[in-house]
Image (cartoon, rainbow, N blue to C red; front, side, top):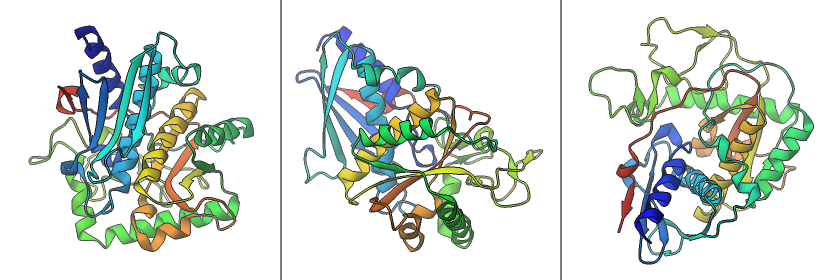
Length: 327
């Protein structure tokens, strides 16, 4: 690869790292081999969460979402990005090898998603009660299928069950000192001793405090130390979707991460606000109850909240050279 090519690949990585990740931990590393044109994707063990994500499933989801962004950005630039997942089974942190090649002809389905890469943000604000048209929901389900995953839109009874699990997870979290401490390490409120401002959840992304009943979003300000934080009533029955796969292996987690990002980008283009609800999936005692027993989904990897409302604010990202190496 020449200097121009490496500059193009750098721009692809800059797009890749806008992907969502658990607590905005940004748990990825990219290594480009200029001799082969292969971009290796690694998980970063320093950014793992042993309490909330002991199996690194959430880490794989975040890296899979970044991998999908990379594919979109490559197509936008007229390149192909062909990933091989888990190329070296003996190295569990080596998540993918991506063969990059300039073709000059973008894949229309992927490149059409590119405008949403930097528009998509997690919204922790209330959504309206306006129903999402069936055609839009069907399109999101089809997007997940393109990545060999299943997105299901639950009915009323299943939605109520899932929301009960969300509220149960809040009780589990409040009773776990280690979980609360781990979340606090990724929260940025401006107090002394916090981590870098280029990672984690900043206070302006907390959203308003819940009013009345428990909100469907995680409250990162559980000690309620932020002064003058607004209160708001959230929707009584959120419109949610469940993303899952038939099996529960690291390769399935990477596929689910790519499907998650494809769905989020398509939802953004469809004018929807989105947020992620992983709380009940972080507890083995609750996760299995999230799936609909009548569904073909064997394992749920993410709960999505969809609707019409205020878009979220952009959360910070580390400088690309902190996560990208050229050899």
